Length: 160
Image (cartoon, rainbow, N blue to C red; front, side, top):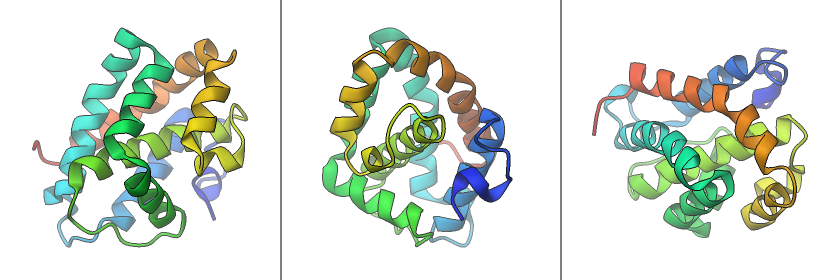
C-alpha cells in the first residue's frame, strides 16, 4: 500500500496526501520519541525553508537545490526506505531531510500524473520533465501539499 492509497482519497486531496506521507515518515523514523529525532528536526527545517525558496528561485531550481543537498546516494537510500517502510537511522540527518522532502514532492507529483513512476528513482529526469512545460502548474498544485507538510512537521518535530 502506498501513500496514495492509505486513506483512499489522498490522490485527490493534497492535505490527505501530506498526512499520509507524514504518517509514513513517522513510521520510518528509527527512534522511540520521534519528536526528538534529528532527522525529524532537519525535515522540519526543510519544510520551513523550501516553500520560500520555491517562491524565490522557482520550482525546478529549488528542487534541484534540494537534490544537490541530499546527493544521489542519500536520496536513493531514503527513497528505498520510505517505499519499503524500512527504518531511517540517524546519521547524515541534513542530507536525509532534503532527500525526504524531495521524495515526498516527487511522489506527490507522480500521484497527480505530472511525472512518471520511474522518475521517483531518477530525479534529474523528473526535474527535466517538470521544467519542460509543467513547472507553472506543478508549483501551484504542490503548494497546499508542502504547506500541510510544514504544519505537521512543526507540530511534531522539535526545532533543531
